[in-house]
Image (tube, rainbow, N blue to C red):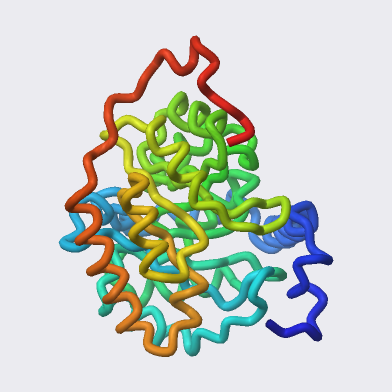
Length: 295
């Protein structure tokens, strides 16, 4: 971690700072290129790749590998040139790629998404704090096949999902508790992510995936997000019911990305074969107060 950069010190960062930065960047983007201009350009764009099918039909256990230049908890990750890293992740067996576009804290850029779309043959997820429909259209214009919609951050999850589908994208709807899960299911989300990281102190708790997994019907895709560092972590999350994994920091930090991702895929495949698929979703949870916002 680069201790000389105050934005890399988690003690000086809270999630509100990140959201404030996102709002500032959004204003600049809107001023630079109004939504009406983006919509005009989209009329001539090609259909996006199918993100959902990529996770469902992957020949191997689906891993969404993330191009992540930096993080608030680890500082600069220095993954190397985007082109080389993207092709390496794709050739190593990733089912899809996540591209960080948040500038200040993750050192991402919307142009990374555009560049990746020109060299990758697998679906791309725009990973950012999406707070406005403008960013959905922007993601599509720059080559995304999916975006991350955080259940308690995007103003109207149902509307966000609808806009994504109108643009040919199936979003990854991120949840952190049972209320989020209920909101996502009520909005008919197909791909639901469980973020194991707390936005309060950035700590990791895999029990979040374990606790929330039983709330999902078996026809939904459960993506476990954040915190995977070891093969033991992969085993845990697969045993907790994950259908796919989103992994960024540890892949970027790996000495040999290809070897590390290969071991993850093998471990996940072996573990998932022995895991019984989630049972039917219990509608009684709603009426009995089974949803716990503190999970």
